[in-house]
Image (cartoon, rainbow, N blue to C red; front, side, top):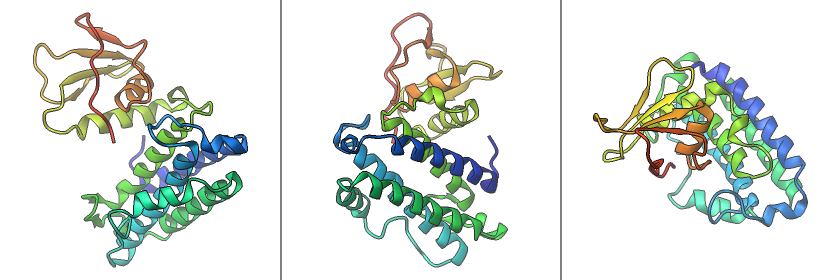
Length: 235
């Protein structure tokens, strides 16, 4: 998967349209049913997807203007926004996700080459990392809607980048793993591996889903033979 933020924005556009298509097929009462995220309804997930787009719009604005514009104005604003919006009617939720995405897309289109290189203090990465972060949010939370879209619908390129990100961002002390996605010549390592570190094999989408808590790992292989370990909690 390309690192070019403008190319990634095309992926974000397409992923958002897929999510909106799923949302438009929901029954109005579906907003109050449980999602795949503990404690969140479908309405919580859709509201979060919208507010997350606004948060990343703020970060791109910061990068373009140089004026500090944090993702959320206060430490509690993220949770407050989700709680305030999750009970709205489905039509309003869908319009909100679409409008928030359009604001994000407009902010990306306004970025200069120099702005993409701006190091955003709150994330410790350049603004060029933001489109990937948004794509990840849309694709993973689309699965969380539990409305027919699953990790099997992820592209191999997305899944491989996702599992590599999980491995790279593992916190110190995380149980080590050696990941062998099918079709990849070299393994992806997580943590401080040793000669006894378990090797997990399977399709990249299945491994990524398992690592991110979106699947139970059924179908993955473990070497040496044994129980599939429990991955560290992600996000």
